[in-house]
Image (cartoon, rainbow, N blue to C red; front, side, top):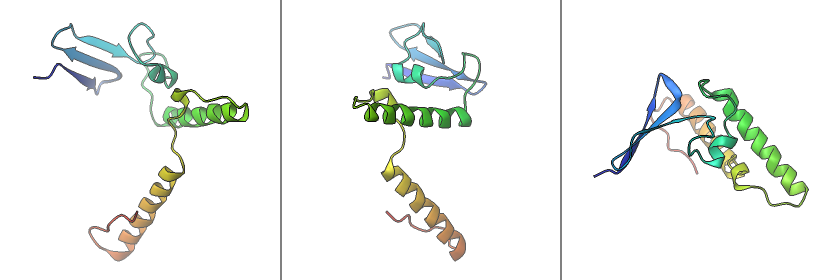
Length: 117
């Protein structure tokens, strides 16, 4: 038996409902310090509750966290764990391999081309 589940409402993408067997349902909103959102979640929330975030804000968070990590390293300070959620070199190489495979697939006319690693 499940003890809890999470449900996101498509009409309210800034809202998450946590349903638990042993506790009342809890509705979590982005940018709300009154509920138990993690520090990482609060750090990566830019807009007030009621305003859905998307593509542009996601990239802004990645760039900001990279800049904060770079600043820490320049100052000789260990960066906070919350800052370290940006992609690195390995993710970049994987992304390029994916793009090359898509191009190869398109040129070959095959239905499926295995991804090179």
